[in-house]
Amino acid sequence: MAGLYIHIPFCRKACFYCNFHFSVNQSGLEAMLEAMLLEAETEGPNWQQHEFTSLYLGGGTPSLVSGAAMTEFLDALRRIFRFAETGEWTLEANPDDVTAERALSWRAAGINRVSLGIQSFSDEELRWMNRAHHAAQSEMALKTLLDTGIHSVNVDLIYGSPLLSDRAWTESLRRVFDSGADHLSAYALTLETDTPYKKLVQQGKYPAPEEETQSRHFDILMNEAAAAGWEQYEISNLCKPGSRARHNSAYWNQEPYLGIGPSAHSFDGERRMWNIADNKIYMEQAARHTWSREIETPEAHTRLNELIMTRIRLLEGLNLEAAEQLFPGFKAQSGHELQRIRERGWAFMEDGFFRLTPEGRHFADAIASSLMLV
Ligand code: SF4
Figure 1 (cartoon, rainbow, N blue to C red):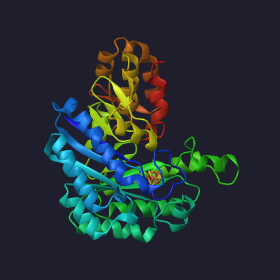
Figure 2 (spheres, rainbow, N blue to C red):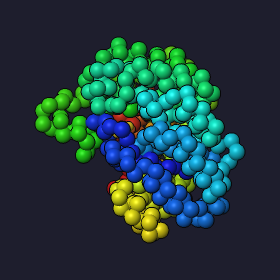
Figure 3 (tube, rainbow, N blue to C red):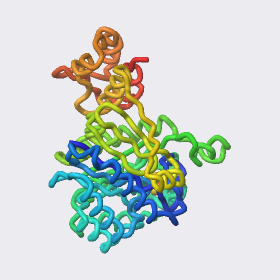
């Protein structure tokens, strides 16, 4: 079992909060696809023992690639890797790229899940974030995907912005839960380093997100999801029962994955590797058939920290025995902190798993950090 991630590093516009690797100059898109296939061909022999149960086209904006070019690209990947017959094949799309013609071509090419970057249902907020689409396009895109037979749809939303009222956030969530989509990724607006948003806030031109608003929005998220019968299986990921995302779950479960494209990360079960986050240098490397990846073999305490960081955010929680096996002495070392978190009402123990309460989910990352070994 393994996952395959493809990073398409181009976008139409630079959303002001985004620190992913992408370029708004799309002139090299087709050459980039060729370069990525060269990397895939080079990596193919190293991954023949793996059957890929998920494929994820992320970025950047994969929906910028034409239907014909995407079909050709996916056919080429099929010739290189072994894919499970019932695999999850996800493509990230922005609403302004979704047409019936394109959705039908994605489906014919094997895509069975689309992750739609809606982010907000307010035109004012979309403009504020420098998004390329309008709110009306989101509704249309969702309907088009479902009508063309792509029944598994994730919606990305952002909460906690100074422009988003509690009422508008509640309405946005209800819209998603009633839309026919089966998955929601909801992220708090954050000030990432090297983003236009951070600069604008530092210059006093834009307001920063407020913790209080974000906390209220997070409560609304949990309450609305519970009322709709959706499962919050990870702090930022919710779904209809039975519709958890397989690809992301594989990351959280430390399964191997291969990343192709500039900035893409890979994990072969022992080593972590990542490609250069620079389109031009990546293309030059492809022309030489030589990729200089950064490689790191995490030590036991780093692997434990990764386990804590990912599992604390999951509904199932952290299996303390698994943590102990990975790093003998963990339970003795962290016993006091585990107890303190439980006493504050932020977590409880069930079947050997340390699980967060709804209140504790507000502080998931801080709790994970407090348990990590330095
Ligand atoms: S949020 Fe998505 S569409 Fe916007 S710049 Fe980042 S990768 Fe591109």
